[in-house]
Amino acid sequence: MQPHDDSASTRRLAWVDVAKGLCMIAVVALWVGRQMQWEAGWINHFEAFARPFRMPDFFLLSGLFVGAVLQRPWRSYVDTKVLHYWYFLLLWTLIIVPISWLGGTQRPASVPAALAELAFKLYKPEAMLWFILMLPVYFVVTRLLARVPVLLVLPLAAGLMVSQPHSGIYPLDWFAKYFVFFYAGHVVADSVLDLAEWGRRNRVATAALLIGWAVLNHWFTTSVHAEVGSALLVFGFLGIAAVVLMSSLLADQGWAAGLRWLGAHSIVVYLGFYIPMMVIIRVFRRFAPQADVNLVATCAWAGGIAAALLIWALLRRTPLNFLYERPAWARLVVDPKAGSTRSQPRPELAVAGR
Image (tube, rainbow, N blue to C red):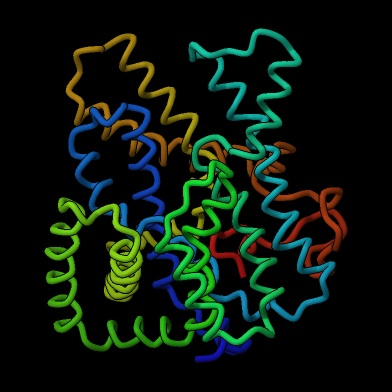
């Protein structure tokens, strides 16, 4: 079992975007449920079903093509795999946190308190931004471990995940919980791509496997084993395999083109859905407090995604495009193909960045 070579990046197929789209839908559902304090109707059941594989799959997809860039000069690597994501972490922390204060009850009492809370949110990011904090850490650690045998690193990473530490140091706990999936995406990338191809060529068998997995995953998520570290590791990888197979079935279906497009723009949704979702829920609470929870959850879920994409479409050709595309002044390396005033092309913005 060896890390894949550069040729693996050329095999990136449509299923990758479909998989990211599926995961993005699940991520939004998670935060709808949390904002509604788990009084969210069908969202509760969907989120519980997706819990074992939602973030593991996102991290594995993020590591899938890292082998293609692992040998870049450090300056370029840090620019695209560290500063790139931390730029968006800082920027969107400065947007999301103050807006969350506007409708909340826990507002800072003073400017120093507000600045202190903003600084703390870079250590323990608001809502979904923790993913963007951790990705650069995984990229750097994976590069530092490039010469360490895979058969040493992978079991150690799995052991960290199984231990499910709760040290109170949030980045350390997140690292332990998800690094195994990111690293596995790197070292077994060819096998993942082969699995997707097998699923595409064996549709009946794939459908049967997915049905069996769905039954098994439902049992697991409703059982007493749902919080056991070793079981979470196994069902995390089973769920990842299921998403890969499902995505391979959907990738060439015309009716799934929207899902594929959503996955290709996953970072736009990931950064932009939270505020519209929060606004929709608060509007319902204020003006229609008796509204059916399923209706509220559906509107917040679909509305958050749609609003994020709409805002991006309106701003992408304006000076505010820096919300989604890193400007030249925030780069260590200027991409010669993109000119002197533009950041890297959009593919780098994808959550499973290349």
